[in-house]
Amino acid sequence: MNVLLWIASQALWISLIGAICSVFIRFEKSLPKRLHKVLLAASIFITLATPLLGLLKKSLDDQWKIEMQTRIDAAVKASQPKPLRERLIDQLNFMDKTVLKKLAAGQTNFSGVWGPAAYSDLERLASETGANKYISFHPGPTMVSSAAAIMGASYELSPSLLKP
Image 1 (cartoon, rainbow, N blue to C red):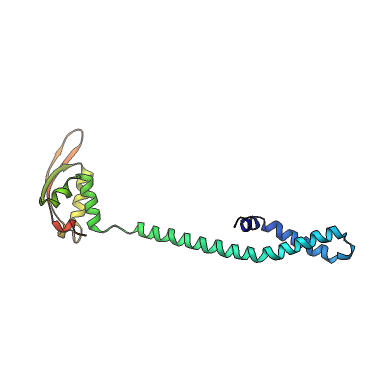
Image 2 (cartoon, one colour; image 1 turned 120 degrees about the vertical axis):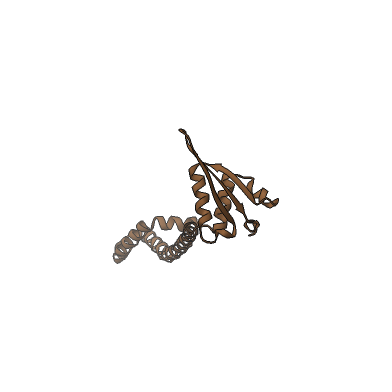
């Protein structure tokens, strides 16, 4: 493979040498034997290198196409939103890592206080279509201080959230 890569990187020079050889071969009878042998070796090399360059180009094109398709597939997958269940689990874990363990143990009613961002994320997820299968969200009091706002809520989780 290293030979093919070297040939590919030197393709311009190989083509130039091939053109020069074809010009010199026209004057074949007036060339010294040593130069004639060098030109013959270069012509043979170029004759063999040309199909190898074609194979290398096809191989590199195929590898590039596979790599690009892999990148495209990854980008498409990354651009599609996660299912509601996964996003809700991620948000609950972000807010309180023990909630899912408590749900698995049988507790279904929860309450807490959070900052505005976490609160609004949970409220938004709970209001999405189909979220009522997993969560019932009940807003609570909001406490505002000079430092920050703290928002409270209670929510009920369905054990079906734990089922894949």
